Image 1 (spheres, helix red, strand yellow):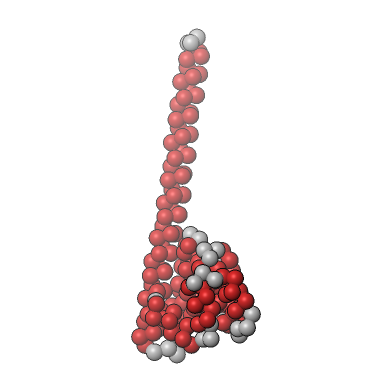
Image 2 (cartoon, helix red, strand yellow; image 1 turned 180 degrees about the horizontal axis):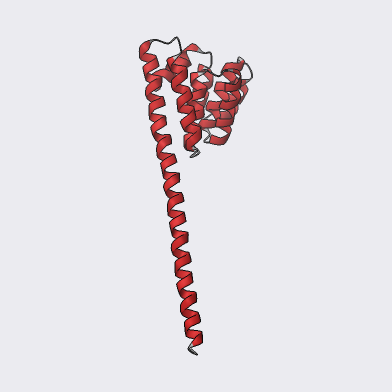
Length: 167
């Protein structure tokens, strides 16, 4: 994962932006975005929001960038990361699928494609866990409602029985 991100960083002119983000200078990073190409600006905005822990904004920025650059590995990666942080299992699962597909069809060296594929596989696993967790929470909620309903019904029946006996 790190190798792939470093490769993308080296291929773009946004090294200054990432240095500013590393130092926590989000204000200067915003200014830096204005002088970038559209693709670099989409990547930079996405990374800025991720580092600021605004995962909804990061995902939105990545999705906007993907409208113009649908096979951009960095944007696909970051959109999927943001979806995972937001607990959006199905969106993360779809992002992992798209990342794997884009990596497989890219012109990157084999080792680089494999690194992106490993990230996609990891994200897919995490997304599955989120989805399974949500399904289990739903099952537990349904069971708890049934149990509470049964308890309330038993209490009501007991109360009615006691009222009939004059208690």
